Structures are given as C-alpha cells and as structure tokens.
Image (cartoon, rainbow, N blue to C red; front, top):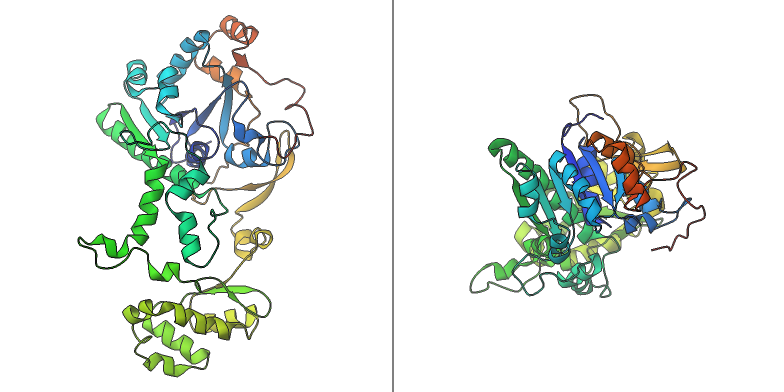
Length: 412
C-alpha cells in the first residue's frame, strides 16, 4: 500500500478505542501498522455484533489497515523478539499506564537503548505529575471529569454522557497528530523522540477553549460558559416532517432570515441587529426562529434558505446518515467483501491523498494473522518461531477459519 507515510513502520501496542483510532488514521495515510496483541487479542475485537469470534463490527472498522501479531510479552522468551521488532520500527505507540508500561520494558529509556531513532507515543489517561497520574481512564470517566454531562444539563438536557466515544476519538486525533510531529522532528534531528498524549488534558482543553469565557480574564469579566452553546434552544428545529439545522451568522444572513419568516422588524430591534447584541439575546432569538420553522416541511425550508444563501442542512438520523446523498456521492461508506467475514460496510478515511491513485488499506486482520510473515521479515528463524508457538507465546490463527462462529454481540 502506498500513501503519504509509505515506509513508516509503527509497532502498535494499543487497545480498545483511543490508540487503535490513532493507528487507524496512520494506516489510512499509508503507514505500516504492526498490531502487537496479547494472546486473547485486543478487547475491542469482542465489542459489537460478530459473525466469528474476535471479529466484531467495531474491530472491522478500527482494525482496518493493520497486520496482527499475537505475542505474549509477559513471557521472558518473547523479549528478544520484541526487541527485534522495536529495532525495525519507526514508531512505538501504546496506551498503558506507566507502571504496566515499565514492567513490559516500554519506557522511553528502554526503547531508546534498543533503537536510538525510535519515536515513542504514550497515550495516558492523565499527564504525569498530578494526583490522577496512573489512575485508569475510560471515555465515560473523562467525559464526566471535563464537565460534558454538566454542559448538557446546563443547555436543557439531562446530566448524561455524549452518546459517542468522544474522549477516545478526540484523544486519538491528538495522538495521530503527535506521532506525525514527532516523526518530522526525528527525521530532522536523527534523534529519538517521546510524546505523551493524556486524555484528560486533551478533552479539558477542548471544553475550556469554548467555555472559559469570562474567566479568561483575571479578575473575571463574567461567568464561565459560552451562552450560545448553552442556550436550550440551540438544537435542531422541528419542521412538519423532520428536523433541520439553521445557522445564520452574519448580519446580512440574519436580516434575510427575518424577511423570510415574516418578521423584518427584528432587523431593527437593537437586541438582534448586530452580532454582539444577538449573542447576548440568542436564546429568545432561537426560540422565535424555531416557532416559524415548525410551519413548513424540511424540503420547503431548505430550498428557501438555499436560495437566500442562509446556512441550513437537514438533520439526519443514524439510519439516514449512511444513505445521505453526499456520503454516497463521495463513496465514504462502501460495501466490500472481507476475506473471512463476508460482505461488510466499510468507512474510508476522510482525508484523501491526491498525489497518486487512492489505495485502500487492507481489511481488519484475524488475531495473529500476520505473525509468521512479520517475524520472518524481522529475521526470526523458523526454529525459533516454532519454539514460540509450542510454548504458547506466539499465537497463530488456525487454517480453517477465524474462530468459533456465533459470537455474542455482548461478548466484552
């Protein structure tokens, strides 16, 4: 596979959501991802519906573009093999807490001694040096710590989590970006690089960037919280047959909208005439617009707003999202044949490289599917490979298939 990162080899020891999402993106950019898994595999292999054990719906997406090597690093006999893999890697990435990482020899000092040009990316729950360092961190916990449930409550909803692994995904974006920056630094300096990507700090920066607001100043010039985001009327508007989002922003767009809804006098109202005043009174303004939108169909409003160059879009459901006409036109979700799992829907990467013809990353692998070829490429001889298999340290898939069929969708 060719791509922007062609020739960059990543040794991926991450599990679950955050790290695998980061390496999924690196694979989409063309990096070679060697997914080093424990004998039982990444737990995400068991999350969601599955046709075969350890090949769940979640893994079929997040595991794409990677080669799987299943090796028990807890066994001392695996250490020479691991060091050989590290010596050939450009990047090592993991999401273990520091005590577990040190126990497996994944500290920067240990890896740099093996490969003086290595890039290490450690994804942590919390940055080092604080009271939460070394505590476990999962998406729900981080969402709560950075006040996402509180923001939902303040904007008129229940105190609840965002129904998306937002902390995992955002931190994965940070990790992929950090790896790319560290690779650039390594290529320029020739020296090993180490980057730490903490979930809590990544998400806290997102939240505070919008909602520090009046507390930006010392002493404060107002309360925390961006009023437009906390406005209980900041939600899709109900039409006669669905929902739409409408977001006029400039003075011209707002004044045009006032004309369309039949209330042109709002453009002369000092509360709504200019941006600063509109933001201060945005709740009542959104409520007024919402009352008018309920009187017509989605298509009728979208046509009128489009003609007036007012930003507006339909609000999809989960089911209609994959059938969205733009999604279909750009071929974001495509039906393909997986070698063992049959016909599946596959999501291509959002970023496209236009330098050469697009080459799709390989499908998500079975557990240990590439063990033999990865170790052979690393120069491990057949006798040593057989010894690792016999000792139960190296797991290879059976030739008959990916595993026992009928895996439970709740097998986590």
